[in-house]
Image (cartoon, rainbow, N blue to C red; front, side, top):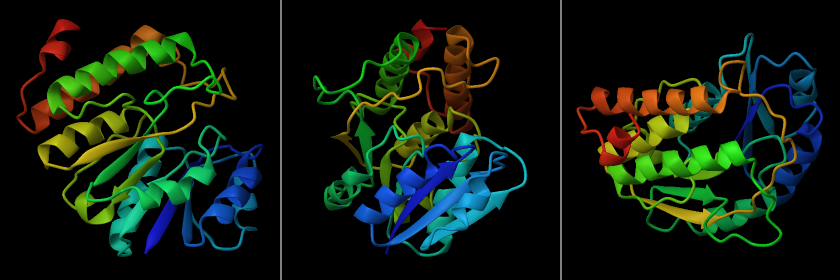
Length: 241
C-alpha cells in the first residue's frame, strides 16, 4: 500500500489545485495533516474524496506535521509513503516516477540541485546559501553525498521508519531525520525534481526570517541530535561553530 502525505497550514489559495493534481497522478490513499489552519483550509479538505484528514486545533509546526504523517503510515501498515508540500513548489506529476525509482533504498529524496535546468527558478540567495552550508555539514557526518538536505518531497520505505525517534516540530526536522538515518543505517539516494519558487516572501517565523538565526537554529538541532545518539561532530560542523 502506498500513501501520500501533505502538511497543510493556511494553504487555501493552492490547496484545491495541489490536491486535484495529486489525485490525478496517485490512485492510492492521501492523508492531509491540517496544522491548525485558520483560513478555511481544514473545511475545504473535507470536501475532497479519497483524502483522509488529521486536524490539530493549534499550529505545532511543519516538522510535526511530517512526523505525524510518517507515524500514521507506520501505524496503518503502509509500505511506502511520499511527503509533498501544499504550496505548489513540488510537482505531483513526479509521484509515479518516485514510486517507481525507490529500488532497494530506504529513502528517495527529491533534490532541486541534482540536475539543474534552465527551467528551474532561481532560489532566494539566503535559502540557497544556507542549504549548501547545511548540506555540506550533513554530508560530512553521513557520507550520503546529498545535494539538497531540505527538500520536503521524499519517498520513504515505511519499514525503515519504525527505528526512528523523530520529535523536532520545526523546520529543522529534516536535519534530525538525516542524523537518525545515518545512525540507524538507512540507505538513501536522490532524485532530481524541479526547483520551483512561487512565494519568495514565505515567512519562517519572526526569529527564523533572519538568515543568521535560521542557520544557527539548524546547527543547534544537528548538534543536539548528534549528542543524543553519541555520534561525533563532523569537521564541517566544528568549522562553523
